[in-house]
Image (cartoon, rainbow, N blue to C red; front, side, top):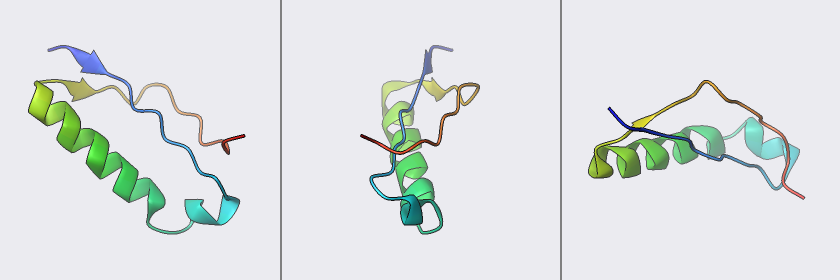
Length: 50
């Protein structure tokens, strides 16, 4: 099955503790499923956006 990579970012450090990460992952999984793709989570960088 084809793979996709989800780029998740946080404008503020506090968002890592809230619902931002699960919400972004859920949206990525939904998008990938609609396209017949699987999210590859082998690359992770939970840094802040510029």
